[in-house]
Image 1 (cartoon, one colour):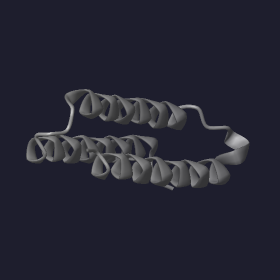
Image 2 (tube, helix red, strand yellow):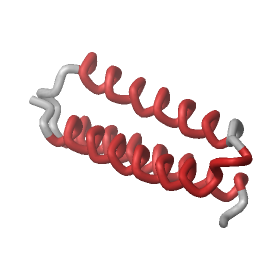
Image 3 (tube, one colour):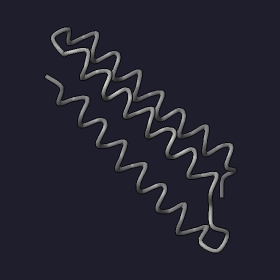
Length: 89
């Protein structure tokens, strides 16, 4: 199992990549309202805070299921945000 510090860095990198992708999309597509960009950026930051804080509160009896669920939730959240980014109008 990876260290918590490494997992937090990985989550931060995923969120950083999502923010960069969002900002690049906003620069390429000038017709996208800035409120939409801000809302998605805020949801990325909330996702980052949520997942990093979840790593700090692991039940010692449920370690493997916890991290399996964390991985699944992170994948789902990341895919949802990517869908939101590419469906901006």
